[in-house]
Length: 402
Ligand SMILES: Cc1ncc(COP(=O)(O)O)c(C=O)c1O
Image (tube, rainbow, N blue to C red; front, top):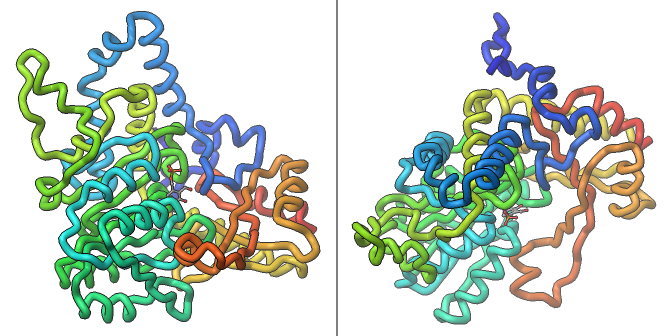
């Protein structure tokens, strides 16, 4: 595709000009809201629109029938992206929906669930409901001195036993921090406890491998750093767990009643809705292939370089205060501006055609949901870089902030 340049001293570098030429929006806006939803590249848009055109021309079921092989390839592409097998992948319409479906389908033989303070808020709400229904006890793990999940606290809780699962959000919604997921996975494996990883903010900006991460479930969303269409997401479920899933939705069951149909195999697809946007799924597959063609390592390196540049250039703006915690940081940069609300900063930057978003940083999403009378939130501006952003765009951001 020609989006990778090879240099003598740095063998894999993203060809930013080619990436921008593939991304119409880069000519219109400075898009630093990739943690919200990235600009979608042309091949993904062409895939989605191409399929919708076929639905227009020959009918929805008929257009779907034409794509059976390409639809199958979406599972293989996602499997390749995260080091899984296609049977361990299910496609859903949102990360939150996928997380709720899979976690609700897990057997709860024991009664304690461990979660980090920065767990995605919707996940905490699901856990709260499950806890009420199944009599589970939710245990919120401490942060360590860097703001990451405290793996020593995790270990103490694992040693006490009676753990149904451990939930972790890899990259929290409103912070540049990358939680030490592989370390958590290692300890969960040693204890024989299921580990559920929310990778919605990390997939597409950081290389992921389910074995290296040691997770049994991983959830990713399409529209963020993966650059897929909106309304797309996926769930990975480790093969050894598939037999034990008890999904509330049995939408693929009609296969039993259809001509030649049989009981569906125990594969992650049991979690799926039969009815969905085929165009969206094909678009998601194209987005995954696009990321794989570029390489997740070059993507991670460039995203990190741009975000680090943003953080260090913020130092030249005295009224800007950075909020990112964590030992390892990613493409999300959160900050506030003295004397201005986050909404004012966002509106001001929008006037300069710079897209950022606003995020609420409670001291802990888990605590805020579980104990709602805790209301000490900090509202911050979230600027999130992708590989198609440039240094000169960051200059313009800094200039606009001055
Ligand atoms: C960390 C994290 N997890 C999960 C989600 C949910 O993804 P979706 O909006 O696809 O449900 C988000 C969305 O912002 C997120 O930031």
